Image (cartoon, rainbow, N blue to C red):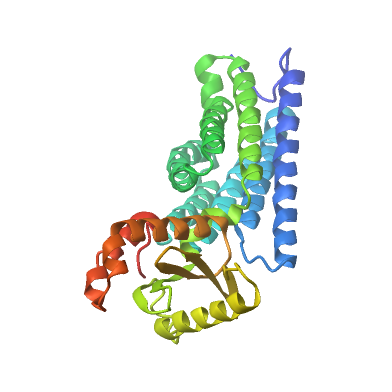
Length: 356
């Protein structure tokens, strides 16, 4: 039979592991907040690092309350409840920003779920705190499902470029879930001992190392949210004649794609007369960034909110596949734009973008 606060031969080992996990959560939080602040000073408008800072800070705060309730004689019902509130509020903030940047295509459903989660916990806490742990665990499975869905989207987007890192993230997520379950009171009661909690703590600590290493090993977390940063896709001939355009932010009017394509070619021609063998690849215009990729017959142009390596690679892929598909047509093109209508399918396949 196990009881709280935790005493006996496992107390020192468990407490050491718990404090190491707490320290790791807070270190990761400070790291990502610092990274966000550095990017902000460098005019990088990504907020993904801030979200991860919040994510780890809320898990760390929850761990503080769990330690107080499990090891130091504080109320074993009340103090873990504060930890549940920390996780719910942190999840709400994290997912609100994720859905605002259209990284999750769930139209604020996930944010609403976590918001309702927080309100339900508050009501249960005021009415009958004795059952709050059961309610938290029940809703927690839905919360984990949403987070797993978010991570699955990340994995799909970066798998080809960062396969090794993706495998590390997948291992980390799996260990995180197993570790979190292993440290729960339900698991301890089910196995009638704290050995399962030791295993859970080790799994949780290992998962933090995997996830932290992965998140730090890619060029920028901003790359994860690249889809919400694309405004226009434009394909022109090498002489600036517009072949195909796609507008992914139709509500933002005032941009004439034909004029933009012509103007860009004019700048390019000017630079080529000054610097031999040079190509204009990136051009900033107000709050927009214009990316360009040159093929044998066409120029691919992306108008985006931020210069990202992912977008450059995808633009290059678009130009390559467009020219492969329309090789004979472009070379002998007579001016019929309707020929290029199937390009919409190619763009959707490469960018997985939808208007709206």
